[in-house]
Image (cartoon, rainbow, N blue to C red; front, side, top):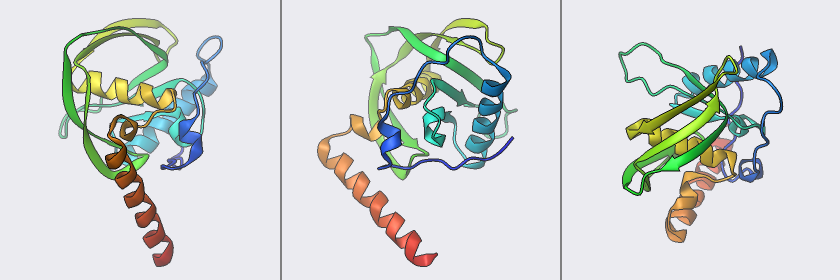
Length: 174
């Protein structure tokens, strides 16, 4: 396992659409998921899409266990949302690819999804609460969408300006 570099906005690779995993889930895919999980924990974060480490594949890892709880890693290969509730809920989101920026995003409160797990088995389940928010956020990454793309133009431009300023400061300090 290895910790990989997380791409940050405005890196154009984050805007590309990820390709489906063809065929069965292989040991190479599992090795990628292991690296993603280690990278996510080190960041620290609760979800990570493969494109965030420069791999344009439809793979997501997640662990929404609370502090003090045992780790509960989840793996999603080729996830798809097959149903969304009409009811929506706001949630303050952040992103490892948009560091230090947080804002409220309105999303469906519940979703039903289908995906392949770590072993390559088909799973269908419903998600609500933080799980629903996180899976929708990470699935947006697979489509080249960042959470700030859901914000008003002004808020999105302010977020990108803050990121560029932080990057310049970091470069000066290096």
